[in-house]
Length: 93
Image (cartoon, rainbow, N blue to C red):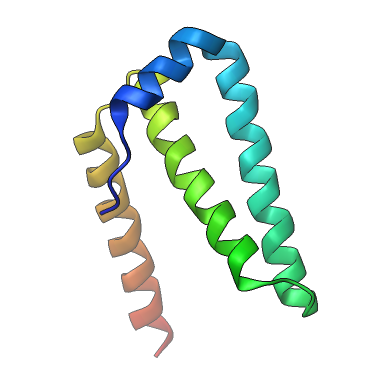
């Protein structure tokens, strides 16, 4: 989907450590939450939202590297969750 440079991910994990990078990822997720809240209140801006989304994509890749989660397993989980959502939507019609 989006290209995230895994070499840079690994360099940052090596330099700052898994614990610190996990905290950074948690903070980035919170910043996206804040940006979305501002959007709902009508005070957000698109540039900030895009930056926060990009940060979260980077962090998702970093989390999968740090915690040894295979991307194919994630893809399968996404597929299953979306199928479940699709079935719920169809059932509501």
